[in-house]
Amino acid sequence: GSVSDRQSEMFAFNVPHFRYIDDDDAEENMDEGRVAGCRNTSGTWSSCYSEEDYCNSSSYRYVVVSGTPLKILEHLLSDLRLDDQRGDGETEEMLLDDFLLTYLVFMSTHDLCQALSARCRGQEEGKDALFRKRKVLQLVSHWSRLYKDFLKEEEHVRSFMKTLYRCVLEDLYEFPTLEKDLKEFQKLLRRRHKQTYQHMSLKENCLQLRSPQTDTREVICCVYVSADSYLSVHTHPSLEARELLRIVALKMDRAEEDMVLAVVSHTGERRVLQPSDCVYSESLTPQGKLVACRRDLTEILPPLTDSAELSRRPVRLLGINTWDVAAALTHLDWSLFKSIHEQELVYYTLSRAPGTGHTAALSVLLQRCNEVQQWVMSEVLMCVSLNKRVQLLKKFIKIAAHCKAQRNLNSAFAIIMGLNTAAVSRLNQTWEKCPGKFKKLFSELELITDPSLNHKAYREAFKRMKPPKIPFMPLLLKDITFIHEGNKTFHDNLVNFEKLHMIADTVRMIRHCQSNEVIGVDSAEVRASVHYLHIIDNQQTLFELSHKLEPRA
Image (cartoon, rainbow, N blue to C red; front, side, top):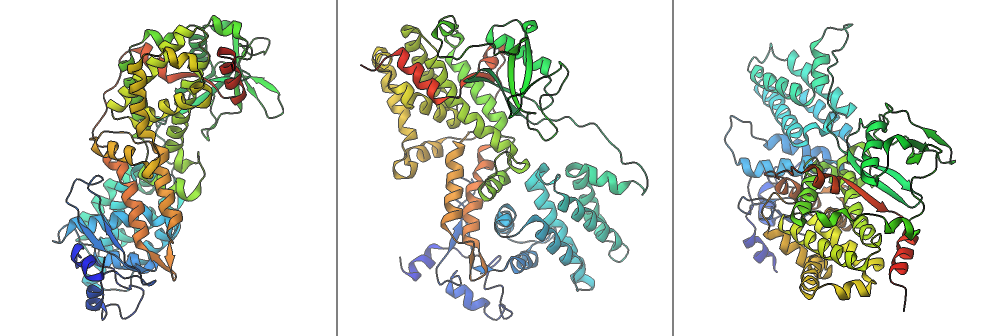
């Protein structure tokens, strides 16, 4: 619409209000900027707002132009209201949230720490200096609360926290009112940066206290049981070889004492692991390709295209209640999803380096999504009996429907896509024997995977769901990547804050989805059915099995 129309739609707050904040005469242009709305240096208009489906509060907006990274930070600190000051906290919180969620797009963590250190030691004196230090502490506290444990591995952050602590401590004599802020900061360090706090609390030359920490991270371990298939095991990083062998024996109906676990190097050399050996190295990566072998170091299964072996394979899934399987899938997905930090989505989009320390939890959930899709294909194609295969189709369709009902669109999507792959969808005899009501249900479920109109069906269905809920993560990442690659980060060397707000708003959906909790599953058998998945990872094997089951006419 026209400029006047767009201005009438936009509710522009006086604070915070970015002008051309890189200009020295920004204060003189403030009133002009308010009249002009939020025109950036490229002459385009930008309005940033919180979407109702991501935030339950009313749809409020702040007005943004552009600025250099350091000037944006300066402006943020200048307009930041302290806890004992009255102000429009909701708007400030949104602006601060946007900045802290997305600063990595335009500056490094090291640069942010350097800038905050400089501002803590600013040139002001008296009351202005006190306010500046308190505001830096408040911004850092918000940053730490937002990122939770995500920052504790960052060397720059640990060094900055020590510097900030000492800086405030030195000023305590001149500004006794800093004592309350310092105590709050100490609590934050104890809770979020325990090692840093302990190190600062001990005298120099003393040994640093070491307290054993339980590693609560989750990993997916892949152990090959044939040349073309592996067992995916959802487990913990301290997994030992004996524990993994016990799981393989249970799942594959093999005697544990007849097997060993070996690591295969890139040259093909096999090294047998001892029972107490840890499967994962300290960097949370397997020591090599893991293979469950007989004692003569041959695979426990021949290639799966040997149908004689598959004809003896029990189809355990047919004996388990579909709602329970869906609940177990949802509970496992939820345990992975709730451990994802919002910042992982930004790191993943910027670095495209899956599996790094900054995207570990997100990478595991994405791997899980892919494996559920492969598991569905594998289970159907490893089922030699036509009647049982029809039962499996019905089972998976019901499980997908239950996952959707349980607001887990990550697994629902994966199952639907697994059934839609070419190797499974070409099984005409199997699908023809599937009752009409199941085919109708599957057609309805397929609608949420329809990509037309920018996945409109999925987006509308997901918007109607109340949290807790699990989004289809690949699509969420695609949205962020589209925003990042489709909009310039800088206009004439000034940060395009509209882009940052759009990224932050999309990332914030994680917070909305993660509110509330998902109830667990009690049955060990049901848990095992989804925690340990037998997966064919060879496309040629999948198609060979498909054509053996139903040869081309």
